[in-house]
Structures are given as structure tokens and as C-alpha cells.
Amino acid sequence: MKNLIAVLFAAFAASSVHAADDCAAMAAEKKLAGAAKDSFMKKCTADAAGTGSACQATADEKKLAGAARTSFLKKCEGDAKGKDATAACEATASEKKLAGAAKNSFVKKCVADAQAAH
Image 1 (spheres, rainbow, N blue to C red):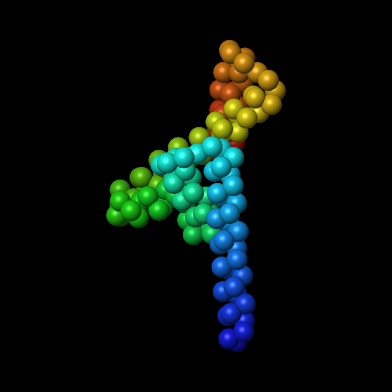
Image 2 (image 1 turned 135 degrees about the vertical axis):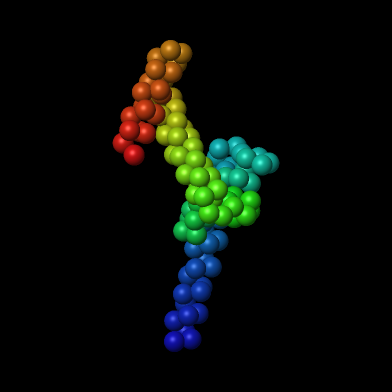
């Protein structure tokens, strides 16, 4: 039993280090720095560890409870989904080499479609 616990602990520690390395690499790729990098790293490592979202961590830091916490989490997670959809749509528009009004129109429709799907 002690060996099993030791193996599980070692696997968890290795996966945590690997997740941190992956998050650091993604932050570097996105050229994030300062508060933006800190926020990204916090969310990325929390998501990788499966311990909750950055929104939950922020709610914990703000010591929110009850209806205030529920309201905050709903808005925060909705905003995060919108940002994810926008980023994905922007990337697709770039791949298609869209610019100007065509890009704006594509991104607007893409984000609306993504939000309707959720």
C-alpha cells in the first residue's frame, strides 16, 4: 500500500511539473509578460491540475460566498468562453488571411455561432 501511494504521489508530482512546463511554453509562445502572464499561468495550471478554474480561484481570493459567488462565477466563466471563442475565430480568420471588413464580419459570425452552440 505504501508503494502504491508513493507511485501515485510521484506521478502527480511529475504531471504537475509537466503541466507547469507546458503552460510556461504556451505563455512564452503568446509572448505574455507581467500580470497577463501571471493570470494565464494561474488559469492554465489550475485547468491542467483539474482543481478548478481561474474564476473559482479569483472568487476564493475575493472571499466570495453564496449568491455573490454564484453570480461572479457565472459572469466570469461566460466571459472566458467568449474570449476563447473570439481567440479561436481570430486565429481562423488569420489562417484564411482575412482582413478589414471581411475579417470583422467573419469573426462576428464565428463567435455568434460558437456561443449559440454552447
